[in-house]
Length: 404
Image (cartoon, rainbow, N blue to C red; front, side, top):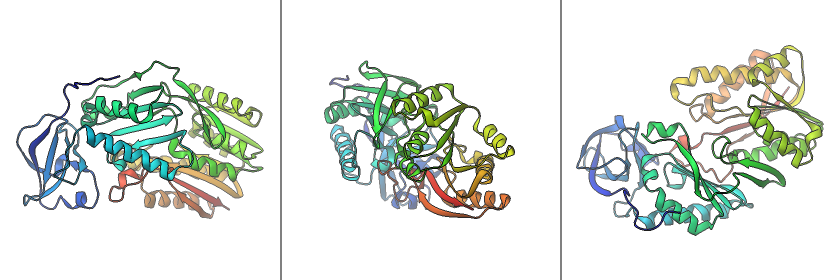
């Protein structure tokens, strides 16, 4: 664990970032990012990761945050108060505020997101809790330089058995940061068992995607299980079997779970077995696009289909191609659903906003001659809050649809 006397911590400088005329509006309405293209000039000295002040074109204070001109997001806002110091007490206070929020909105705190980046006023920081273990991601340069202080505060607040760092995300490249992963406090067995709505899941925090388990879909998996009684279910892009296990536990007659990753399927099978569900779930290692195409061409029919793919649009340039990908899988799913069937369809691409996602769903429905009504528009679980004024924090869309 990091001790006292931290070296190379960011400074709170007197440097002033002056915005171009009119560019202060989004910040004043809640956005927490300043893009490089919005900056007119910078006055004063600073190092990447230091804290700077942001002013509008008329010299009026707007916000304060850490700077990194290598990133397109040049300044990540920490506070709107010019007099609030960015020191160790600041981080301790923000972390406690984030944890108190989870204690307010969640009934079960065993496995949850503790810090959700900008939505918790901690830009670039992700912290997930799995039982008595924490997984940490510092995805921006400024937050990475404060990591020793943040980790010590997390250790004091949660007293975890272990802390694991998953800083192997490609987004760190954009910040000029190296990718790395490993034990911060430990070592310990990185395969951790958690409980989710009464089901047992093994989470691999070292090798799994992101931090090892998609906590944001927790409540959506529970709803799918409630709608699956007696159903023949297809779970495409099943990863480690979250939706598959919940639908089987909810009384599905049979579940087919498809994923291209052999490692993910091995963990999914283990999760099915530890919940006594292996006899009702068939696991198929296949590209989900290919499986959906072949199943539709073969005339397969299902009562429920779950589509929870990875992000197809990681940037705005990929949006057109992503639209076609989402449309293809949803079109094939709608074609295979029995009249009155349920489609649970998701997108975790924040560039694919709700309006565009619904336009895509309507296009797909019209192409296959189906009528669709929206049962529920859903998003991430409440430990992944959305910050008003910053639509980028509303990345997950989950639609429950009735198709006839």
